[in-house]
Amino acid sequence: MTTTATPERVTEKAPPPREMTDRARSERKLGWMLCAPALVVMIAVTAYPIGYSIWLSLQNYDLRTPDERSFAGLSNYATVLSSPLFYEDLQATVIITVISVILELIIGMAIALVMHRAIFARRTVRTSVLIPYGIITVVAAFAWQYAFTPDYSFFSQYQWLNNGWSSYFVIILTEVWKTTPFMSLLLLAGLAVVPEELQEAAKVDGASTIQRFVRVTLPNMKAAILVALLFRTLDAFRIFDTVFIMTRGANGTETLSFLSYNQLINRVNLGLGSTVSVLLFFLVIIIAVLFVKGFKTNLGAVRGDR
Amino acid sequence: MGGKNDRLFWGIGGVVIIVYTLIPVAWLASLSLKSNADITDNNFIPTNPTLDNYRQIFSFDLFTSALLNSLGIALIATIFAVTLATLAAYAIARLDFPGKKLILTLALAIAMFPPVSLIGPLFDLWRSVGLFDTWPGLIIPYMSFTLPLAIWTLSAFFREIPWEMEQAAQVDGATNMQAFRRVIVPLAAPGVFTAAILVFFFAWNDFLFSISLTSSDAARTVPAALAFFSGDSQFVQPQGPIAAAAIVVTIPIVIAVLIFQRRIVAGLTAGAVKG
Image (cartoon, rainbow over all chains, first blue to last red; front, side, top):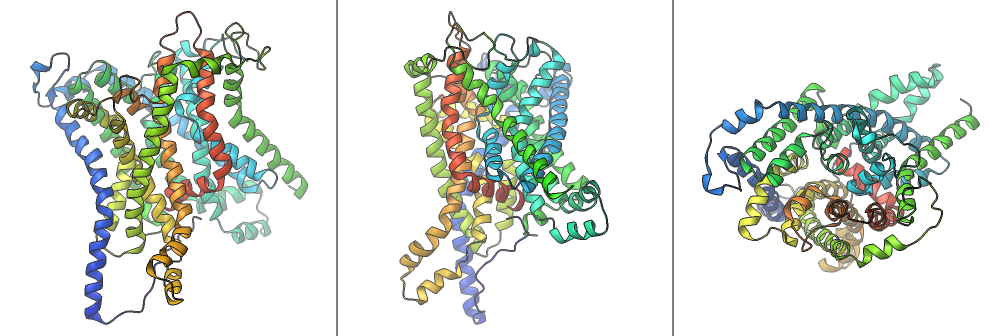
């Protein structure tokens, strides 16, 4: 399923040159026509609002005092960037992102190996792994919240969600539970492309299981690992649902998405809220660029359409 | 490791994974079956199982309207997104035209977007054009946020379709329409269907847009309604009904996963790794 298959397009015999240009022209036109609706919707509902968001971030615009709307230049950015709250929330976001993505990679790899090797109950394992993926995040957050609330828990009487470190623990656990399956499926796809002959050859040369994993398996699935890491890091960085349900940002667990939501929807301060969301947007771009540059991955090579 | 030990080792691994994925669901199911008096008894197995919580949520307008909103909004968003994505993916997989790469890159960039960046502008826009707290007000963002996923998944699928079979059928005397209906549609349908499942999951799961862009039963979906359940607990603990509602919205997902396991896995990995 994941080999770098080249598009299997119909290879027609090359028609005479003049006919070719006509064909090519009509093909081009048809291609654009078919893509236009999707393109228009994507641009209208994402690119345009992002521009509008930047515009809002340059204004004093509080819906409680709409008459005082005025152009503010970069003063919102100065306010946000000089506020300790922004850095606390950035820190919380980074802590949750880094720890959960690392755990997801390790556990996801273990699950992928089991799914790859297990003969017994293979189908059942794959099906059960999809359940956390399919479950509504809010539902998963409630389930784990109850499991860690003394009155409703079946194993603990400790107030997990009333303390800083243990709140982090529960939030990260929930994130890991919910999203590791997705990670493991991406890694499983990567495992499937590691050539079996290489494994055999290493075995013949007397390599141990661990040596084979480190020297043969890992290097051969580097691309899949990086894609999985990139996707999950960006996803974890915008964490919102779990925090909202579990702590509403209490105990120092407020994340950047939550801060932005709070300013926009609860305080209806569209200027400041947009500023936070624009900053978050640029942080996400920086992470993506760092990933692609830092690991020198060619996402195109992974996709197979260089 | 020998063959037998090997099998045992991976088998145990499998069991551990199954337990890991099912524990929280089992816990919710257990809470949902406890009466208001028993809910704090900390027992894993309910001592006096009752369906009261389920009866209660189905008598709440808050829940029934949210369920209806969730289903309707997610289905409509799925139909629109998959239709538009099918057209675009067909062009990307089969036709040669400049700008193809640009479209795929743009789609990838949008997929990486933090949704919260759109909340402010959409909140402001929707309020001024009357889309705030309406079905279209949610359908539109869901549709555009899932288009990238759908386009990537579908173009990966479409690349694998042996399109020359269409011509073979035409050579055999089938008309264009027949060739399309008998040959191409059955080949493309699984891919389209997979994309539809993934899009539906996204819309069904969303919380942020739903709490930000709705303010009443008119369009509020289940995840947002669940968050509000906990708010208005007065004399009765809301945990039982929340657990019951959570189980109700999880059942369709579990069924879908059981039936379409293979397709979902193919879709997720095709969309992300291979694209």
